[in-house]
Amino acid sequence: MKSKAGTIFLAGLIAGTLDILAAIFIYAILLQKTTPIKILQSIASGIFKKEAYNHSQMAWYGLGFHFIIAFLFAWFYFIIYPYLTFLKKSALVSGFLYGIFVWIVMNLIVLPIVFPVLPAKHLDFPLILSVLILIFCIGFPIAFIARKFYSFK
Image (cartoon, rainbow, N blue to C red; front, side, top):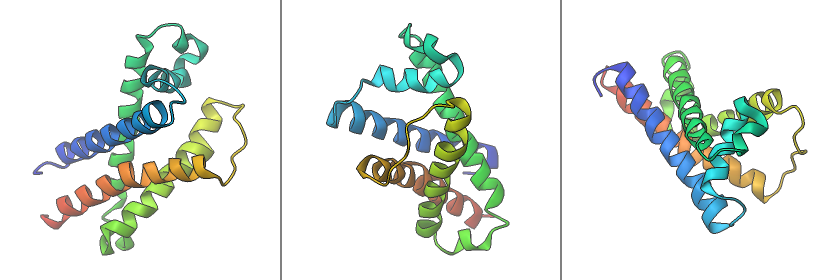
């Protein structure tokens, strides 16, 4: 973890991989609500709209977009980390908070812009599950990697 760019890339790669694997495991395998291809196509549909569901190759675009988003969240955390002292106190707490922040940004800002008609959100199991996935798969890995990186500086 010598270069900041390399560490941000690693954090985004780990977080993005954990997040997509969790989504596939929970929603496609465990709950059998969808398929891995449809999960990735739904990500691609943010750009390609309904066309994303017409070609299975669109899943590759979805995977690419997913990792771009993960890298952006990793990059943002690394940018704010030196300036927000509370992030340095506990990687566990800051990872928890960052996972919630990622959920808020994605579900209350990004998704409503990309998909103007979305179902209403309710405090239920699916919502809590989606928050927990982001805490454990995005928030924690990025927070712990950033803490380790900055502790060597």
